[in-house]
Each structure stands twice: as C-alpha cells, then as structure tokens.
Image 1: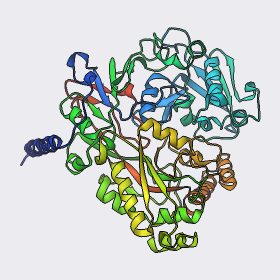
Image 2 (image 1 turned 90 degrees about the horizontal axis):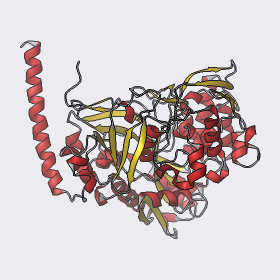
Image 3 (image 1 turned 30 degrees about the horizontal axis):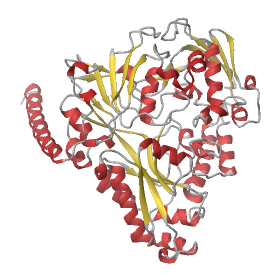
Image 4 (image 1 turned 120 degrees about the vertical axis):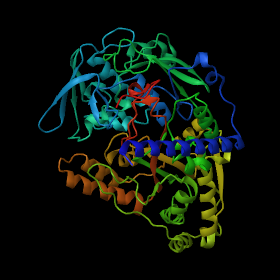
Length: 558
C-alpha cells in the first residue's frame, strides 16, 4: 500500500472510530442529568467569536486579589506586566517592557518600557504606574494573598508585615517615565518569570482611587492587556473584546471572547458537543464516566504539567495539631486507588509535593501508603482503632455536577479509607466555590481539598506558599527552619546548592511535619477541534494565553 493510501485508510478508520465514539458519548450524555444551559450561551446571535468553558465563576478580576485559576485566565488577558507568557513554552518573554538590563550580581534590574505602551483609554503606561501597582499589592490594607510573590523585591516583605511604614523604601522606583528600577533582596533566578504573573501586572491608579471596589466595572474599562472587559454577567459569561490600543494590536487573534462559568461536567460537554462552545479547559469539566472514551478522540489533548492535587490539615486545632494524627491520615490513603478508579486520566500518584519535571529540581520522597504504620501512629496519639476520635469534617468545593464530579468521588473515597483503615468517621462538608475559598482562607475547616498549579517553572512556586507569612499557606502551620531554608535557597546562584536546600525544606513539609498530604500530579486535558481552533500549545505550567487563540473556519495550512 502506498503512503497516501495508507494515510487515507487510517483517516477513514479514525473517522469511523470518532463517529462511533461520538454516538456513544451522546447516548451517555442523554443519560446524565444536565444542568440548565445559561441563556447567554444558547443564542447564536449573541455568540462570541470564541467561546471557552472556564470553570467556576470568577471570585475577582483584580490582579491584586484574585487567586483562582478561572480568575487568572481572564486577568492575564486584561492586565499585563513587564513580561508575559510565551504561549508555546510558558517561558517569560517581553511584555510591557521591551528590554531589560541587570547587574552582574543579579540584584538590580532596569526595565525599559515600550514607547507605545498605552492604557485602553489612551494614556501612556508609565514606570510610576508599576511602582503604584506593586506597592498596592504589598499594602497590608489590600490583603493580597499573593503578596509573598513580591517579597523578592528589597524591603517588600518588611513593608507588607509592617516593619517598614515608608513605601518608598521598597525596591521599586521610576527612574523616568519609561524606566523602572527594581532592587531585589537577593539574586532571584526566576524573577523574570515572576514579572509575568498577574500579581506583578500594572493596574490603573486613577480608576482605583476614583471608583474604589467598583473600578473594574466602570466603562470604558481601563486595562493594560490585549483585551478589554466588555461585560461580566454573573452565572452567565465574561465577555472580552480586543483592546485596539494594546501595544501589539495584531497579537490578539480574536475580536470577541466569551468565558463561561460552567462547573457541571455534563453541561460543559453538552455545550461543546453541540458547538455552543469551542474549548473546554479542564478535565474536571468532563464527566468522569466518559473519560476513557473521550481520551481516544483527536480533539482530546493531554499533556503533563506542573500541578498537584492534595489535602491540607488545619494544624491550629485538635486533633490535627498532632503531627502523628496528620501522618496517620496521610498514610491511610491508597492513592493508586484514586487515580485508577476515579480520575482515570493517567495521573501519577504523589508522595512529594513538587512535581517531577520542575526545572533544576528532584523532590525528596514523602510518606508512603502504610495502613499498619498509620494505625500505630493514631494509637500513639491516643486514638487506638479510632476510639475517642473527635468529630471532624473534610471540606471540598461543590459544583453543579453533583456526585458525578471527581472532587465529590474523591471525598467519598477518602472518607471510606479513613473509616476502613483508622476506624475514624469523617463528615463531608461541601461548599460553593467562593464560600469554600473563604472558609479555607480563615481556617474554618479540619481537612480541606486543595490543588496548586505552578505559576512558573521552579520549585519555589510550590514550596514558598507554605512559608509562615504566605497568604496561600492556609494551614496555620509555621516552621522557622522551613522558612530559613527557603530564604537561603533563594539567595543562591549555585543551582545544585539551591536544589539541596529546597529538598531539605520539602522533606520537612511532606515527611516530618506534614501540614499537607499530596495525592497525585495532574494530567492536562484540553478539548478543542484542531481543525477549528489554533494557538493552544501544551506547556508545563498550563498557560494558554487567550490572545494567542484563533477560531478558524478551515484547518490551518501545513
């Protein structure tokens, strides 16, 4: 058989298999209970040029406040920093700064802003705008949970914690309108990566001071990124429109983009299958019953990325103030059972927190699945066979998919394991997304479902969040030795020495103190038809800038 005939035959076979799989998917979808499809998604007259199913309703679109992944995907389209993410690799590339210089010791940077960097309302973006934006994140009154990402800047941590009252002592200064000088507390190998994160983005001082908490809702919107916020309709959509004053006007590939707050997997897949949506970002938005079938389809794109699913302990109250109890709960979990019976996406079990594949780093081994050892530890803590164990709850976020959601199934399976292996009854507590985040933030839980996806490709993005002063810690755990190791590591220019310090810190986290219990590492799942959608690339930090994505009527030329 010729190559052409072989390819044609393979195409026909694949096409038949796809049609058969689609028929089965549609049959199974019909059997699932579908949530009501938002009215804004059903009218073709209202359909945007590109429609993305984005997950939970955003909590905030303020770069200083937002923490959720669904929020951040929108924010990176609205606000830009000195650098931005390369859509292919996820590496930092020039953003509002066209170039930069740095000192030989790696402690001082000079960023040169683009002469055509403008706000969407037409005014120039200046170095002073960056000074204001970074100081705003660090201001304790802002209560920015990501403020710790700026602690690599000289005196930033002391200002945020109140040791320094004068914001001008923070190491960020405008040399002139187009030049920003940044002094770091020490050499920071990943600083350019940090500059691409939403926390470092520039925001409009005049709007914030004039309109207060409603500054994002004012029209015309004032943003620095490739898109403007045209509308935010709760429980319906966030609509973005191309920013004509963006410094690279040819870069946004799509005029109008809708991001839908859909959390029901059945509804998400139904919208996608019927053509009402073009992209599904996350595996959690696919019915788990269909994963095995859908993984075989050419519109299912899988990839490894730096993300970890875990649960946290609230160490500030009994019984999880006792490390023996924390270890017992961690070692009682059969993680292999979770990934083979529930997630089914090729996820790898995790005993450590930082995923394999993180640049310049090999994580240390954590606790293994060992039920006998878990029972001994629980008995040593005063609860033999679970007797006398106080009532506790496992907190997780709800979705409209009900019990079919993987988070629900994992919660039930963990509950069963702790009962079977430890003789402990754990109640399940399910909250809507924003309420769940708020409860986690104020330590209103015993055990809590959690996850973390890398902001940049470095072990620090995972490990620094459990420093005692980090707003993303959310466990109540503090360890001076852990903090010291992180600080020492981030002063190092010797990458091997740095890696050893980080390994020592992670061993405290996952082996000695155990304020968290890693379960598995994520596998990326994105659904889109490559004949209709271009500009999405797999990368280890799961960054897919909206401005790079184009919906086409025809396949791209080869």
